[in-house]
Length: 331
Image (cartoon, rainbow, N blue to C red; front, side, top):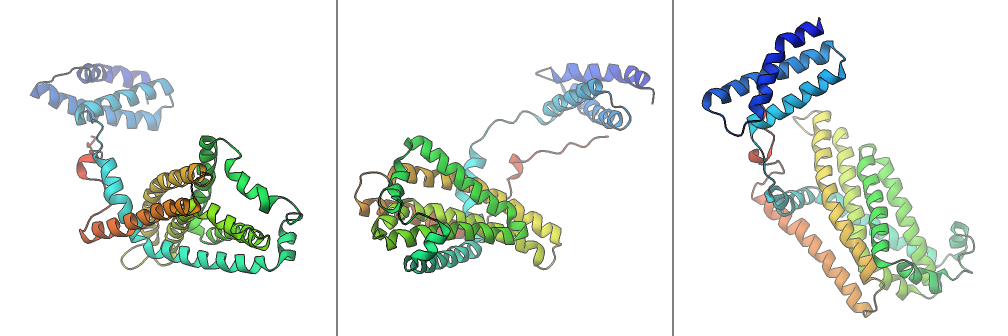
């Protein structure tokens, strides 16, 4: 293709299209002309991409087509409606749909942690084998409590938020392979079981629970939600269900997982605030645990109650048509 001749032949159309996109008002004839020239410019861009590596021309045509598209489809103002719908319908609905997965994960993991705590509390030799020197250190008497006030609260909250987000992200991303999720869960539950067993063996069991529970209710549940949703995604390509290909089932579950991931950002942020500000506070133990428990109950009510209501109303997690991108055909 003779690029110079191609550009020379169509330069007039591009200049006219550029001029029309800059106008605030168009009459009916100019609007029709704008759509026609936009379609032609989109076709020209496709042709140039296929036959010419000229980056300057490609950049010019790409910018022109984008500007023309904006002029044809009209500007779109920011709206809070999709955000509100996400938190009032989409997120709780996806949490409700995946409830069997993350509730089962939660129950099984809590049972395993309980067994590990009881088991390690009577086996100091095993604790020492996993963490040499920990029994003779000040971990149980001082370090465990000091950990929550070692850094400034805002810095500690950000650190906890980042760490927990990484763990949740690992569960969601590796869910398609299934087995890595169990590894991540086991690694975290083993650490919690060792810490609980050590604290109980050292006579500080009450300290362990009063410093874990205020934030642990929501924090651990967030991890269980991520793991359950990740496993649900992995199961989709093993058992896609009737009338769906494995690829389609996996895509649907992955999309649902991304929606839950957005909600987990908020959950883990709240859990980080609780761990940084509530857990080490000077409030009575019953108050700290009670606040953490109430926040956890509020989440369960949100996920199961609000989600159930959205499910029975026949809601969908798809965007409303007015908030999706309008497709404009090209010629």
